[in-house]
Image (cartoon, rainbow, N blue to C red; front, side):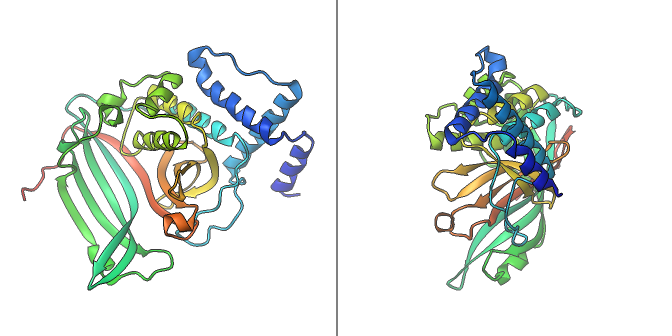
Length: 344
């Protein structure tokens, strides 16, 4: 008897809740992720339904860890599986990520220092040569020094181009192969016009609330309600995870708050830009025909990276399942200074 058969037999012994029950349970779990800091009472339900959900959520978490909640083929190096997640599994995954935040050695940046991030990136590039339009996927190793104090214009960037990949269904254009080699050190940014509430430097992130409910409110700063606001709040989560660092207390609050964003789902298998396989939580971007995923190590639940995956070919202009962008965060460390930038 294989694992899926055992799982199905185990679940068959418990009455399956209907769609309304599942929606109500997701709301209950969303409230539960935030309730410890607010004192709000948990929603009540029947004993039998609570048992059913407990079994479903527990089975889902186990299936996510084993990579069993996704059906479908990867379909090549740039294809991602379709999402077929059991209800409430994303709550379990993000709770594990919150717990893991307190188990890892913590950095203690000082004013004047730099946080140094090493990563691998993949992004679509469009080019026009001789009246010919082409697309391909550019890849690079990236190291960036960002000041702890928050002025991004003092950041320094080095990149090393990696072999590009063809855009799905298209040939690799000749100009794509001419981008090999290193660049930098150079200024990471000429200006930084982000609003205060969108800052992701350590000086700002370290002052954010460690209370999940208040962190949830921060994610929705200056946003309304509805799917578009939820999508932007989800993007804000990614901004606080990618080339950004915050104390463990704030990371815990962030993951618990992220679990409460409506529409979040689990992806049972996701590969980051460095080729590491993990599990992911995702949200469909309204009107974009793609989902944004945050990938975690399936054993330690540490954050690995993020990626965007096409869900609607007509909206995204690429085959469904295509991974359009991806990052893999390889390391984060402290440095007392950044490399000197060559004068132009």
